[in-house]
Length: 191
Image (spheres, helix red, strand yellow):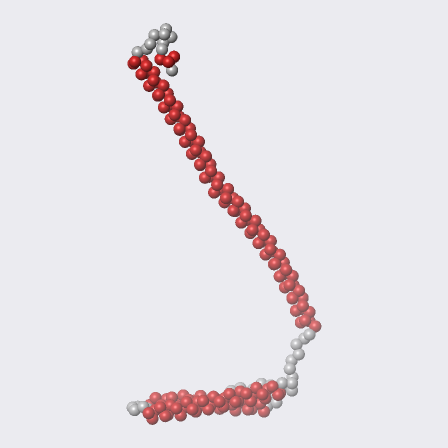
């Protein structure tokens, strides 16, 4: 440093020149420091930018690739299942056609189902009689209720007419069922 401050002739330099040379050296140091800081900042910024751009893209690509592979595996498994199901459907279709061609449907004759017909008719007749008894009890209950309530009883006659129609229809059905049970034909008489 003393070499810089002295001239080549060996005479000491003035204070002003010395101050200028020191300030000149500081300026140069500052400029170099600022340039170095700017280069360092740009380098760090570029590294961060590259890191940010690569990281999500790389993860997404890896994630997408993994998802694509898993979807391809699922598609392959589903295709295998579909092929197995198609084979089962084809076998079932062949078995069905073989059964249909080998065994024609046999109609029931009237003599075969006569006991069943009578049993069904008796069950239905019993249900109709039970229905008639229920309607009779309902009719008696409404008449008793009308006796307990003061006022007009015009609603009672309307109600009894509706119940009488239902009882009459039930009796007609019971008669038709008795005829059907006693007939030798398969079909019941039309109501």
